[in-house]
Image (cartoon, rainbow, N blue to C red):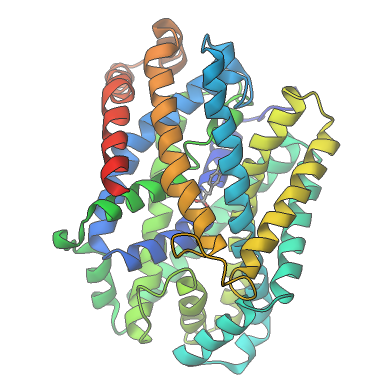
Length: 445
Ligand code: PFF
């Protein structure tokens, strides 16, 4: 058994799903959908996952699996010129930017584990919960401690390496998260204004679809699938030789989509029942979930469990982001793992501190009207990831040898269905993804 390898097929899926499923589904999806018209956003997002997401996941998988390399060297190993290293550099930059703001939200989940235990300090109404979140997130010190606690957990797991740390944790906790979400879905469906919430989420108002909503939905699809920055290139380099790439890509994309829809079904009925605003922004989930728990039998216990699992879901996602940077430093810069982990962590501590303070003391620093937190999110999700997606598609569709692409995606004994799927995937990578993402990008900006 090699040290840096996922050990079982289930482990491969669980780790990939672990990377995909995280705050992107449960925190980011509901607030983006809420801010962009609900149903219209959902439909565009789903289409992007199916038409562009699955092929680009396959592209990252085949690049990582056949090169066995990190995001920086993978392209040159597969006959790309040195210019392709730029994609690698962009991926590394995106990983740092995302880690910066993601760790802040992960820190919020730790605070909310504590808040659950103390029953949200007696706050019950929407206004009280709103004030409570505002006071906490704009505090100069308190959120920083939770960010550090979260990053410390990352550190401990990362120094143990991929197989043991990441795989073991994903195997147990991902299925558990799923079960808990199911309980909350059922609870939300029984709320008085469930119908209104579901209508908001599922009934598309096509007039709400503007180019910037479409770009937002594309960014959400890429963010949620951990796509466009080489995370899945890195993970695929740890896959075993016989890992079925297309199947793994499809299962992870569908599960990821399902979790986002479940999060929407949990949040929106509650938003309408408890008189909250669907377009509240990044704080939406942290203000709505407590309302749900406070009105549920055994709510405190459920709330605690939920925020613990959300914490873990964030952890399995940040581990995969860290791994992009660490794999690069270990393999391309020949650093020791310990040194690579420590160095990356220090940079992330600085970035996340800045992002956290942008809700309070540093709120005045704005670029295009966005504070540092939202700016990191916008730059990475709506610019770096889609551009990375275009380049990765072009690379897999046009630069990697056709023979290698087919061998990687088809495996040894392909079924007819797999052959047809692979044809469609290759077509999408060569034409649809570069042109489609390119157009969305130009109009959306
Ligand atoms: N997909 C993760 C989520 O939805 O929470 C976020 C993420 C993980 C983005 C890994 C990018 C990445 F490389």
